[in-house]
Amino acid sequence: MYKVAVIPGDGIGPEIIDAGRMVLDAAGEKFSFDIEWEPFDIGADRYLATGELVTEDDLSDLSRFSSIYFGAIGDDRVQPGILEKGILLAIRFAFDQYINLRPIRMLAGADTPLAGKKPEDIDFVVVRENTEDFYVGIGSRFSGTQKTSLEVLRNLYSVKFGLDIQSDAEELAYQIGVVTREGSERVIRYACDLAMTRKKKLTSVDKANVLSDIYGLWRDVFTSTTRSYPGLFTEFTYVDAVTMWFVKNPEWFDVVVTPNMFGDIITDLGAMIQGGLGLAPGGNINPSGTSMFEPIHGSAPKYKGLNVANPFATIWAGSMLLENLGEREAAAAVVSAIETAITSGVVTKDMGGTGSTSGVGRFVADTIRSS
Image (cartoon, rainbow, N blue to C red; front, top):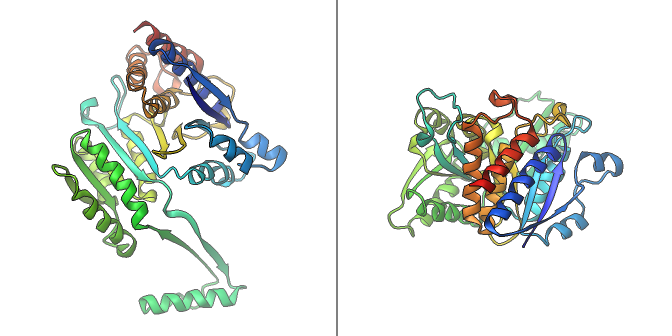
């Protein structure tokens, strides 16, 4: 028996989570385990009614679970960023989910915009640091009415670079990125361990040629950490270059490790080359604590309640949840059943089909039961 917390969230979230739960329950029937689901009312409706995002009581309750199954967040009635930062990022940081794991894999039957590429050409994993870098929230914005603060920043800039900020600037904003040795080492070590179970090939992505202080430390830690993995092939590449190589030669990559911001960017590119956001799952992982699994797409409010949203990313995220629980055979069966659905043409409108959210989920569940 596994106990799993469920946060359906906003927009299409409840529909895709229902499809995912249907599939994971079928996997449990097939492979002899049960999941006890506990739903949490966290999202836009509660925020609009009470002003609450994620409370301390919510976090205390969620801490009882090793896994959270998350739908989608975002609502047109709420200013962008409030729900995302106050709920999604708040949970990631509260539970120190320092690994963001993104499989970039083209499933059988899926389409890629890359000419001539086949499923065997697109099969790698991006390990993204999930709690540091420019996402730590250290920054501010100053206008000309805040003369003292503006002058302090101008002076700092002048001392550091010997240059002057435009003297008549009326407004200034800054954001600070933070990379620590400890934070870098733990995510790089996780990526090394993963790479050793695959093709023993690890690519580091950064921008150390321009942001040399912050990503110079990242490179130092990468070099020192990977030395303890004999037989592991390693390489550095810049984030702008990797966006080209993902498109030109995706078959080159196996495990990619990257700081937070660049990981956020390149995994969306990865989603497109694997077949689109409807096929892109993600895991926010604390290897010794509470982890959260979700599709990486948004809440698509205009499709709420229409039963037309693609549930594959959510179902695949459920497969990642099962693997994290140790149910590897069941996890593999879920992905295989998704491939069966795609090759059979049981897909939603975004993939050229006529299937409904619930109908696709039911097909995948039935495929698992009959396999």
